[in-house]
Length: 47
Image 1: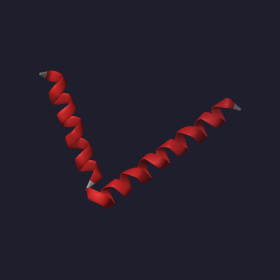
Image 2 (image 1 turned 90 degrees about the vertical axis):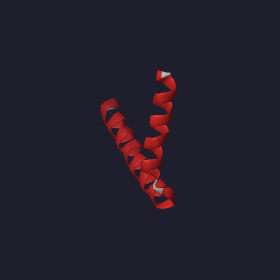
Image 3 (image 1 turned 180 degrees about the vertical axis):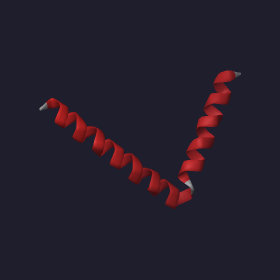
């Protein structure tokens, strides 16, 4: 039974993630923005 709960939980997280991505993309090209933020963070860490 716990495995089914986990499967549903991860599925819900995935759906939330996708819909949030779409929401951001509609607002201001969210995925590109997220990628640039990740690049900024990784470049800050490397210095």
